[in-house]
Image (cartoon, rainbow, N blue to C red):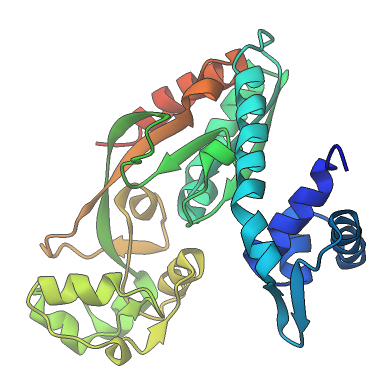
Length: 294
Protein backbone atom coordinates (compact mmCIF):
# COMPACT_ATOMS: atom_id res chain seq x y z
CA UNK A 1 0.00 0.00 0.00
CA UNK A 2 1.57 3.31 -1.08
CA UNK A 3 -0.88 5.81 0.43
CA UNK A 4 -3.59 6.01 3.05
CA UNK A 5 -6.98 7.66 2.59
CA UNK A 6 -7.04 10.51 5.14
CA UNK A 7 -10.74 9.97 5.86
CA UNK A 8 -9.93 6.45 7.05
CA UNK A 9 -7.26 7.77 9.39
CA UNK A 10 -9.76 10.31 10.77
CA UNK A 11 -12.25 7.52 11.38
CA UNK A 12 -9.60 5.43 13.15
CA UNK A 13 -8.61 8.35 15.40
CA UNK A 14 -12.19 9.27 16.27
CA UNK A 15 -13.06 5.71 17.31
CA UNK A 16 -9.75 5.27 19.15
CA UNK A 17 -10.18 8.50 21.13
CA UNK A 18 -13.89 8.14 21.92
CA UNK A 19 -14.13 4.36 22.29
CA UNK A 20 -17.38 3.97 20.36
CA UNK A 21 -18.87 4.39 16.91
CA UNK A 22 -21.69 6.59 18.17
CA UNK A 23 -19.39 9.10 19.90
CA UNK A 24 -17.00 9.07 16.94
CA UNK A 25 -19.90 9.72 14.55
CA UNK A 26 -20.98 12.75 16.60
CA UNK A 27 -17.43 14.10 16.56
CA UNK A 28 -17.06 13.77 12.79
CA UNK A 29 -20.64 14.59 11.84
CA UNK A 30 -20.94 11.19 10.21
CA UNK A 31 -23.04 8.08 10.82
CA UNK A 32 -22.29 4.87 12.69
CA UNK A 33 -22.68 2.63 9.59
CA UNK A 34 -20.28 4.83 7.62
CA UNK A 35 -17.69 4.75 10.39
CA UNK A 36 -18.12 1.01 10.78
CA UNK A 37 -17.38 0.54 7.07
CA UNK A 38 -14.37 2.86 7.26
CA UNK A 39 -12.88 0.93 10.18
CA UNK A 40 -13.30 -2.36 8.30
CA UNK A 41 -11.72 -0.77 5.21
CA UNK A 42 -8.64 0.54 6.99
CA UNK A 43 -8.17 -2.79 8.77
CA UNK A 44 -8.41 -4.60 5.44
CA UNK A 45 -5.92 -2.23 3.80
CA UNK A 46 -3.46 -2.64 6.66
CA UNK A 47 -4.08 -6.35 7.01
CA UNK A 48 -4.43 -6.04 10.79
CA UNK A 49 -7.13 -5.79 13.44
CA UNK A 50 -7.01 -2.32 14.99
CA UNK A 51 -9.73 -2.76 17.61
CA UNK A 52 -11.16 -5.35 19.93
CA UNK A 53 -14.97 -5.09 19.75
CA UNK A 54 -17.05 -5.62 22.88
CA UNK A 55 -20.52 -4.78 24.15
CA UNK A 56 -19.50 -1.39 25.55
CA UNK A 57 -17.46 -0.19 22.59
CA UNK A 58 -14.03 -0.46 21.00
CA UNK A 59 -10.63 -1.02 22.62
CA UNK A 60 -7.40 -0.60 20.70
CA UNK A 61 -5.57 -3.76 19.76
CA UNK A 62 -1.80 -3.89 20.11
CA UNK A 63 -1.43 -2.85 16.48
CA UNK A 64 -3.99 -0.08 16.86
CA UNK A 65 -2.19 1.31 19.91
CA UNK A 66 1.09 1.34 17.97
CA UNK A 67 -0.55 3.34 15.16
CA UNK A 68 -2.22 5.92 17.40
CA UNK A 69 0.66 8.41 17.68
CA UNK A 70 1.61 8.25 13.97
CA UNK A 71 -2.05 8.89 13.12
CA UNK A 72 -2.15 11.86 15.50
CA UNK A 73 0.99 13.22 13.85
CA UNK A 74 -0.80 13.00 10.48
CA UNK A 75 -3.74 14.91 11.93
CA UNK A 76 -1.49 17.61 13.38
CA UNK A 77 0.32 17.99 10.05
CA UNK A 78 -2.97 18.25 8.14
CA UNK A 79 -4.27 20.89 10.54
CA UNK A 80 -1.05 22.87 10.30
CA UNK A 81 -1.38 22.87 6.51
CA UNK A 82 -4.91 24.25 6.89
CA UNK A 83 -3.82 26.93 9.38
CA UNK A 84 -0.90 28.04 7.22
CA UNK A 85 -3.07 28.27 4.12
CA UNK A 86 -5.80 30.14 6.00
CA UNK A 87 -3.26 32.62 7.29
CA UNK A 88 -2.43 33.65 3.71
CA UNK A 89 -6.01 34.42 2.66
CA UNK A 90 -6.56 37.99 1.50
CA UNK A 91 -10.35 38.18 1.17
CA UNK A 92 -12.46 39.81 3.89
CA UNK A 93 -15.21 37.26 3.43
CA UNK A 94 -15.96 33.73 4.56
CA UNK A 95 -16.77 32.12 7.89
CA UNK A 96 -15.49 33.01 11.35
CA UNK A 97 -16.31 30.57 14.13
CA UNK A 98 -16.47 32.05 17.63
CA UNK A 99 -16.63 30.06 20.84
CA UNK A 100 -17.50 31.47 24.26
CA UNK A 101 -19.17 30.32 27.44
CA UNK A 102 -22.88 29.60 27.22
CA UNK A 103 -23.68 32.67 29.34
CA UNK A 104 -21.54 35.04 27.24
CA UNK A 105 -22.90 33.56 24.01
CA UNK A 106 -26.50 33.90 25.17
CA UNK A 107 -26.48 37.31 26.83
CA UNK A 108 -23.56 39.32 25.43
CA UNK A 109 -22.72 38.12 21.92
CA UNK A 110 -26.04 38.54 20.03
CA UNK A 111 -25.80 42.34 19.82
CA UNK A 112 -22.11 42.11 18.90
CA UNK A 113 -22.86 39.58 16.15
CA UNK A 114 -25.60 41.89 14.86
CA UNK A 115 -22.98 44.63 14.57
CA UNK A 116 -20.53 42.33 12.77
CA UNK A 117 -23.19 41.28 10.27
CA UNK A 118 -24.23 44.90 9.68
CA UNK A 119 -20.68 46.14 9.15
CA UNK A 120 -19.30 43.10 7.33
CA UNK A 121 -22.14 41.35 5.42
CA UNK A 122 -19.69 39.08 3.56
CA UNK A 123 -18.49 37.52 6.81
CA UNK A 124 -20.51 34.54 8.05
CA UNK A 125 -20.56 33.92 11.81
CA UNK A 126 -20.75 30.55 13.52
CA UNK A 127 -21.28 30.53 17.30
CA UNK A 128 -20.15 27.56 19.38
CA UNK A 129 -21.43 28.00 22.95
CA UNK A 130 -19.33 25.85 25.26
CA UNK A 131 -18.05 25.92 28.81
CA UNK A 132 -15.25 23.55 27.79
CA UNK A 133 -11.88 24.69 26.49
CA UNK A 134 -12.10 24.49 22.71
CA UNK A 135 -8.85 23.71 20.90
CA UNK A 136 -8.07 26.56 18.52
CA UNK A 137 -5.10 24.72 17.03
CA UNK A 138 -7.49 22.06 15.75
CA UNK A 139 -9.76 24.68 14.09
CA UNK A 140 -12.65 23.89 16.43
CA UNK A 141 -13.04 27.68 16.52
CA UNK A 142 -11.27 30.67 14.97
CA UNK A 143 -11.69 33.01 17.95
CA UNK A 144 -12.33 32.10 21.58
CA UNK A 145 -13.58 34.32 24.38
CA UNK A 146 -12.09 32.81 27.53
CA UNK A 147 -12.59 33.45 31.23
CA UNK A 148 -9.04 32.26 31.91
CA UNK A 149 -5.63 32.99 30.46
CA UNK A 150 -4.72 30.57 27.66
CA UNK A 151 -1.26 29.04 27.89
CA UNK A 152 -0.79 27.45 24.47
CA UNK A 153 2.34 28.91 22.88
CA UNK A 154 1.02 29.48 19.34
CA UNK A 155 -1.99 31.55 20.40
CA UNK A 156 -2.47 35.30 20.22
CA UNK A 157 -4.17 36.49 23.41
CA UNK A 158 -5.36 39.81 24.74
CA UNK A 159 -6.93 40.52 28.11
CA UNK A 160 -9.98 42.70 27.53
CA UNK A 161 -10.86 43.35 31.18
CA UNK A 162 -12.79 41.83 34.05
CA UNK A 163 -16.42 40.79 34.48
CA UNK A 164 -17.51 41.29 38.12
CA UNK A 165 -19.96 38.82 39.63
CA UNK A 166 -23.02 39.75 41.70
CA UNK A 167 -25.58 38.13 43.96
CA UNK A 168 -29.19 38.36 42.77
CA UNK A 169 -32.72 37.36 43.71
CA UNK A 170 -36.05 37.86 41.99
CA UNK A 171 -38.58 40.37 43.30
CA UNK A 172 -40.88 37.43 44.01
CA UNK A 173 -38.30 35.72 46.20
CA UNK A 174 -37.53 38.94 48.09
CA UNK A 175 -41.22 39.50 48.78
CA UNK A 176 -41.46 36.00 50.29
CA UNK A 177 -38.14 35.74 52.11
CA UNK A 178 -36.70 39.23 52.50
CA UNK A 179 -33.16 40.42 51.83
CA UNK A 180 -30.15 38.99 53.66
CA UNK A 181 -28.11 41.79 55.21
CA UNK A 182 -25.02 39.82 56.24
CA UNK A 183 -23.11 36.89 54.80
CA UNK A 184 -24.27 34.76 57.73
CA UNK A 185 -27.89 35.58 56.84
CA UNK A 186 -27.44 33.62 53.62
CA UNK A 187 -27.40 30.42 55.66
CA UNK A 188 -31.12 31.03 56.36
CA UNK A 189 -31.96 31.49 52.68
CA UNK A 190 -32.32 29.29 49.62
CA UNK A 191 -29.23 29.65 47.46
CA UNK A 192 -29.05 27.96 44.07
CA UNK A 193 -25.85 25.98 43.68
CA UNK A 194 -23.96 23.94 41.16
CA UNK A 195 -24.46 20.20 40.94
CA UNK A 196 -21.05 18.60 40.32
CA UNK A 197 -18.99 21.76 39.89
CA UNK A 198 -17.50 22.62 43.33
CA UNK A 199 -16.91 26.31 42.55
CA UNK A 200 -19.76 27.77 44.63
CA UNK A 201 -19.15 25.46 47.61
CA UNK A 202 -15.46 26.37 47.50
CA UNK A 203 -16.32 30.06 47.30
CA UNK A 204 -18.56 29.90 50.35
CA UNK A 205 -15.89 28.06 52.31
CA UNK A 206 -13.25 30.58 51.29
CA UNK A 207 -15.57 33.28 52.67
CA UNK A 208 -15.85 31.50 56.02
CA UNK A 209 -19.22 29.81 55.47
CA UNK A 210 -18.76 26.05 55.83
CA UNK A 211 -21.50 24.68 53.58
CA UNK A 212 -21.86 21.31 51.88
CA UNK A 213 -23.25 20.51 48.44
CA UNK A 214 -26.60 19.35 49.83
CA UNK A 215 -27.14 22.67 51.60
CA UNK A 216 -28.06 24.01 48.16
CA UNK A 217 -31.58 22.60 47.83
CA UNK A 218 -31.63 23.35 44.09
CA UNK A 219 -28.56 22.51 42.02
CA UNK A 220 -27.58 22.57 38.35
CA UNK A 221 -24.29 22.99 36.49
CA UNK A 222 -26.08 24.51 33.51
CA UNK A 223 -25.58 28.21 34.07
CA UNK A 224 -28.50 29.30 31.88
CA UNK A 225 -30.84 26.99 33.80
CA UNK A 226 -29.29 28.25 37.03
CA UNK A 227 -30.08 31.83 36.12
CA UNK A 228 -33.62 31.00 35.05
CA UNK A 229 -34.16 29.42 38.47
CA UNK A 230 -33.06 32.70 40.07
CA UNK A 231 -35.43 34.66 37.84
CA UNK A 232 -38.31 32.32 38.72
CA UNK A 233 -37.90 32.97 42.43
CA UNK A 234 -36.46 29.59 43.41
CA UNK A 235 -33.60 31.17 45.34
CA UNK A 236 -30.64 33.53 45.42
CA UNK A 237 -27.94 33.03 42.79
CA UNK A 238 -24.88 34.43 41.09
CA UNK A 239 -24.48 36.09 37.71
CA UNK A 240 -22.18 38.50 35.91
CA UNK A 241 -23.25 41.90 37.24
CA UNK A 242 -23.78 43.45 33.81
CA UNK A 243 -26.24 40.72 32.90
CA UNK A 244 -28.00 40.71 36.26
CA UNK A 245 -28.34 44.49 36.50
CA UNK A 246 -29.91 44.57 33.03
CA UNK A 247 -32.63 42.09 34.05
CA UNK A 248 -35.74 43.84 35.47
CA UNK A 249 -37.02 40.63 37.07
CA UNK A 250 -34.21 40.52 39.64
CA UNK A 251 -32.56 42.75 42.22
CA UNK A 252 -28.95 42.71 43.31
CA UNK A 253 -28.28 41.66 46.90
CA UNK A 254 -25.67 44.16 48.19
CA UNK A 255 -23.50 41.84 50.27
CA UNK A 256 -19.72 42.08 50.32
CA UNK A 257 -18.84 38.43 49.80
CA UNK A 258 -15.51 39.06 48.13
CA UNK A 259 -16.80 37.56 44.89
CA UNK A 260 -14.11 36.97 42.27
CA UNK A 261 -14.01 38.74 38.94
CA UNK A 262 -13.94 36.82 35.67
CA UNK A 263 -11.05 37.86 33.41
CA UNK A 264 -12.04 38.15 29.77
CA UNK A 265 -9.43 37.02 27.24
CA UNK A 266 -9.73 37.20 23.47
CA UNK A 267 -7.80 34.36 21.86
CA UNK A 268 -6.99 33.11 18.36
CA UNK A 269 -4.40 30.91 16.73
CA UNK A 270 -1.60 33.15 15.47
CA UNK A 271 -1.96 31.88 11.88
CA UNK A 272 -5.73 32.45 11.79
CA UNK A 273 -5.39 35.86 13.45
CA UNK A 274 -3.62 37.09 10.29
CA UNK A 275 -6.55 36.39 7.97
CA UNK A 276 -8.51 39.54 7.08
CA UNK A 277 -11.92 38.22 8.16
CA UNK A 278 -10.65 36.93 11.53
CA UNK A 279 -8.67 40.11 12.12
CA UNK A 280 -11.76 42.20 11.39
CA UNK A 281 -14.04 40.19 13.69
CA UNK A 282 -11.34 40.24 16.38
CA UNK A 283 -11.27 44.03 16.19
CA UNK A 284 -15.03 44.37 16.59
CA UNK A 285 -15.08 41.88 19.46
CA UNK A 286 -12.23 43.67 21.21
CA UNK A 287 -13.97 47.03 20.98
CA UNK A 288 -17.45 45.77 21.89
CA UNK A 289 -16.37 43.55 24.77
CA UNK A 290 -14.09 46.32 26.05
CA UNK A 291 -17.15 48.53 26.46
CA UNK A 292 -18.84 45.86 28.59
CA UNK A 293 -16.07 45.04 31.05
CA UNK A 294 -14.45 46.94 33.88
